[in-house]
Length: 428
Image (cartoon, rainbow, N blue to C red; front, side):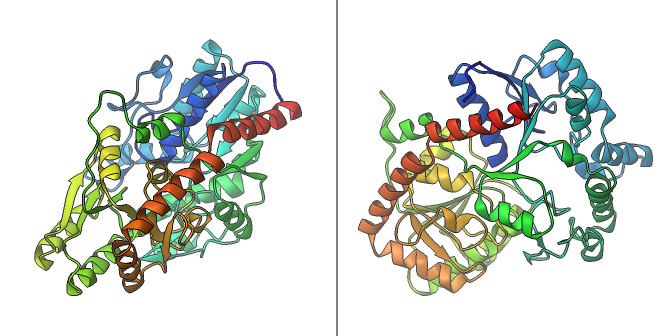
């Protein structure tokens, strides 16, 4: 094991709490700092960014949805060029490294806004590179192996042109074309990810799926962890009034089609038809499906469904604590969802789709229940099963909490992560 204290360069395109990838990005830095290592950050400017010492070196903010909007063709070309290869990111990262020398680089989501162009900078300086995989971008133009309402692996064997044929990116030919060209450039022409010394996969499913689809780089399995603060908040904050429980279930995350929200709504309708309409269903988050979901809720008269919008971390925690359990009805191949782990840490079981890496953590009759993806009847049955067994909800919640404490704790994560660092540093 490495004895010296390291300086680690953490790179992610967002430097604020936006989703699971950002939670892992910040958690990784925090746990390393707690053991005396130093963190240096490189990301993109944004009004919500958490302040940090190296923020002046961050790349300019860009909205990728500006492609196809009513802006000049030159501006659209500049955005597309940045997706392919960002010379600006290379220049700014070089300037940062001149001022802040590092021992190792740990990358997270860098696609599009930053681009893998930065790998050439790191390789030139002989800085070892570790990269945590949060999705399927290494084999899929759209990140999530999901198109037109169902899982898809048509690009298996590096047949990236299938993304154009299927119009996988927002059903747009031009956006699908850009993403397809990006895949061919990065994986076939440049083979730029060969510069990453080792990839980290938080789920066995993601690792096996990438290998199955033709990604032949070295991948190390290391599940995400829950930090001590998350566990401590469930025990109760001194001087804070205890959150009151209520008859509610919660979904929190992005409101988009691949998250299976239509399945959840169909299940709620079935519950109503069976007289189980007193349970309050809280939808927390935002996304492209929100407006249509709200309209459907009104037209169907589903008065027990409430849209709470985006909630800050403490507010979200309180909503989870007061609920009976959490639901994750995804239709896509989830990796190692932080939403599940955070629910477990707060003592709540989870009902989730039996897909991707979810069955690795949601274990039937132990930490929650799984159902067949897209099957509203099966989901409805699992919800009814728990609603009629309040003692089972409590038992599963306790099991879930024990699971993250024993199997997904900081000590194990830190030791295994440092082992990965040791490997790539010894190769250097």
